[in-house]
Amino acid sequence: MSVIVPDFLIIGAMKAGTTTLYRDLAAHPELFLPEEKEPECLVRHGNDARAVARDYKSLFAAAGSDRLKGEASTAYAKRPDHEGVAEMARRVCGPLLKVIYITRDPIERIISQYRHEFGLGEVVEDIDTAVLKYARYVNYSRYDWQLEPWLQIFGGSQVLVVPFETYVANRTEIARQICTFLGANPASLPEIDSERAFNANEGKLIPAGPWKRLVGSRFYQRTIKPMLAQSLREEVARRVLSPAQASEGRLAPVTAQALLDQLRLKPASRITESQK
Image (cartoon, rainbow, N blue to C red; front, side, top):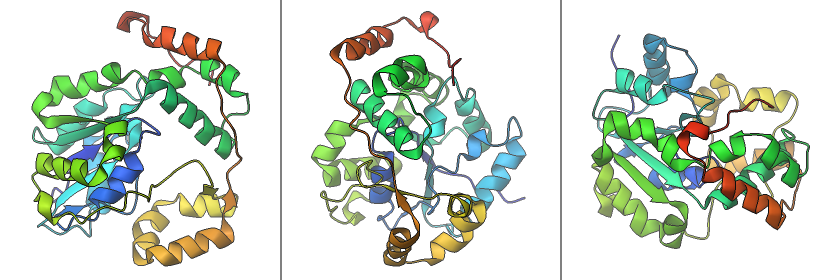
């Protein structure tokens, strides 16, 4: 079996701008990023490295041999839900893999995650209850802990940490710096429209019922979606998708302080998800 694996991963924290960076880098002619964001190849197949490699071969079938290949899956930075991901990445992708990790103000990231999950109907509690009840909100904002295995396995020279706030302040400049890190010519990246963001919670359209199963299927993501022009996808979305449920998602000061206190806990005291 021929080996086709990514040259780089975007593993940024959930709701930290990974989709925007992903779409920005996709405009570079030397980079190939598939239409399917969040393929989660490294966490779908247990300990079966050969199955992961087959999954990547399918994901990058249209990449060709002259472009650097990358994918973005926030699941790769969701300890303790997924452990051993960096080790699997080393087994399948080899020691030269490069990793981009996006961070965001930890409290703002938690708020955005809550709004996202509330909009999808994945959480029904009010924000002050939910973010203290479910450990994932704090765990995903423990950036040092999430980064730890990636730094141990690939080393600091191959892991680039990008603060979301820095990125959005000057997307073209920072994206070109990231291209340099990846080994692509930074001058070949077109100027980025900084007014356009992706995957924002506000006004987001989501699939439901049979549309949810179709849009989430590998067949749609890897066969149908790449053949559709972006304008056609947006038109279809407006016609068949529904707006996400809105939430103001404002934290009470006491809740924000409680979250900050948890984020300061030592690694040995980290809580685990037991109330999902």
